[in-house]
Image 1: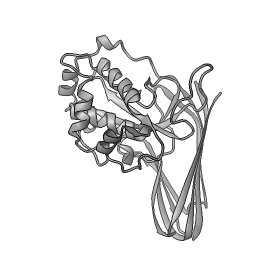
Image 2 (image 1 turned 90 degrees about the horizontal axis):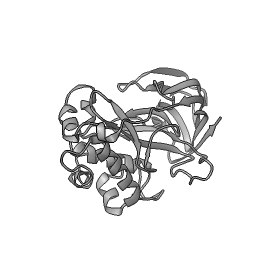
Image 3 (image 1 turned 180 degrees about the horizontal axis):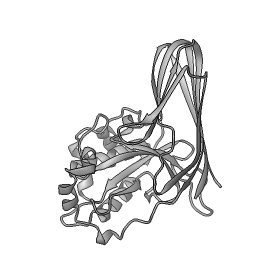
Length: 285
């Protein structure tokens, strides 16, 4: 599937900002299953200096530095991307989850097996996830079950949480948004020793004919990368919509949690109070 993507983020400040430095994770990631055919980032006002380089996780990160007073700031991503994720393996043929947990403490997946700033150790999340992983169950069978349970048990409710809402609160109120459901699933898997990473990106905004609209559309989206073991690698699962990621998602990048791949964050001198608005258009071509 080929998409045209446009993502605009606008800040408006109550007072002029004298100096600003912004970190961006807004460039789609080049992957075997995702070709970035074109991608441009523009900012207003124009930065005095721009630096682009890979971050620790291999995502494309950009730093923008502004040294002229401004009371508004906007960043626009325009891109064209083709995605074609392979079908997952047969669940019954994947390793027992206990073996994946034992193997996941070493090698490339190990850093995603431990707590992180926004996904702390949460025994209640582990208890919730454990119901999907009885002894000896193939790991992908457990992952699919957990993905479906989160979609069924939790209400999608914008405004019910913030960026910093802990997993324990999401569990208690049984409501949140895609970021919360990703953090919840990651916390549960890590509690069982299974490596899991936070994936940032977009979900298709126009549903296929006859299908319901995807929840989380028209905004940035988040889902989970789960480790199947060294032989099979990662599979991406969307607990907000109970989907195995295939051709309706565009990947920006991944990290341990939202904090590693926030689309836009920064440090400013001045500005006072501010408001922010974001617009996303993901058009299938």
